[in-house]
Length: 392
Figure 1 (cartoon, one colour):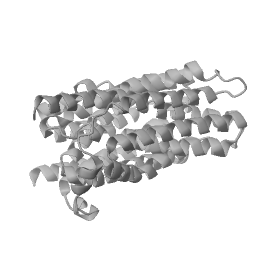
Figure 2 (spheres, helix red, strand yellow):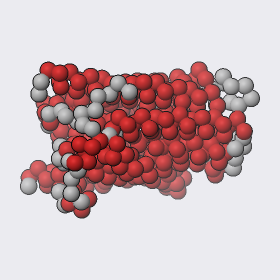
Figure 3 (cartoon, helix red, strand yellow):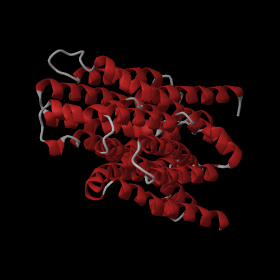
Figure 4 (tube, helix red, strand yellow):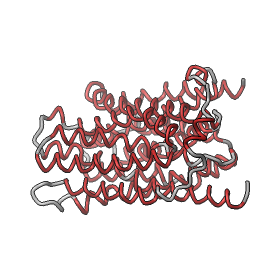
C-alpha cells in the first residue's frame, strides 16, 4: 500500500470517528425524551414508551435497506442520504410536538431509525481497505466517537429543551437536526475506496445460507447479538428497578451515566487488547463480564449493587460487542461485506428492540432477580460455542 493510500485510510478513520460523535448523539436524545414527550402530549400511560420502541423498530427494519444502499451507491452516498433523512425525521418530531400530534412524533422517531442503522455500520466501514491486523484498532477508534456522543446528546437536551416557546422539547429535536447537518459536512470529506460501479462488479454470489453454514461467522454474529441485547435488556429495566426499590431518580440517572461511560471509555484501548490477546479472547471476557454484572445484581438491592452491576455491564458490552464486530469483519470476504454486515446488524438490532420491550414486561411479571438470572444460560451457550470452535 502506497503512502497516499495509507494517508487516505487513516484520514477516513478520523472522519468516521467524528461522524460517529455527531450521528450516535441522536439516539440518546430520542431515548431520553421519548417518554417525556409522550407525557407532555398527554397520551395514555400504556403508550409512553411507543416513541422509543418505534425508533428501535425503525433501526432494525432499516439495516437491510442500508446494506442495499451501500452496495448500490457506495458508502458515502448512502451515508449522506441517511443524514438528510435524519434532518427530516428530527424536524418531523419537532413539528409533531409543536402541533400536539403524537402519531407524527412517532413517525419521526421511526424514521430516525433509518439514520441510526447507517451510523451503526460506521464500525464496519472503517475497516474497508485496512489489513486484518489493524482492523480491530480502527473499530475501537470509531467507537470512541460513541463516548463523545454520549456526552453531546444529553447536553443538547439540557440546553435546548425549553428553547422553543409553547413547545417544550421541540428545540432538542431541532438540535438533533443540526447534529445531522454537522455529520453531513464530515461525511462529504470521506474518500471512497471503491466506486459504486466497481463494487457492483465485485459483488459476490454468496447466499445468506452459505454464510450461516460458516461456524466462524455464525458464532461471531451470535456473540454480537448476545452482547448488545443483554446489555439493552438489563439497562432498560435498571432505572425502573432502582426507583422501585426506593432509590432517587437522580441516583438512577447517575447509574446510567456511569454505565454509558463504561460502555465507551475502554474503546481507547480495546483495539490494542484485541491485537495483543486476540479478538475471540476479548469477546469472551466481555461475555464473562456481562455474566458477572448479573451476579452482582443478584447480591442485593443497595445502590452499590445497581451501580456496580451497570458499570460491569457497560465494560462487558464494550469488549463483547467490539470484539464480535471485529470477528464478523474477518469472517467474510470484501465482496460479501454488504450481505454479511447487513444481516449481522439486522439480527443484532432486531433482538435489541425485542429485548428492550421484553425487559419491562418481565420486570413487571417476575422481578429484577429473574431478569439477571436469564443472563447466565445465554452467555454460557455462546461461550461454549466459542470454545467448541477454538477446539475444532
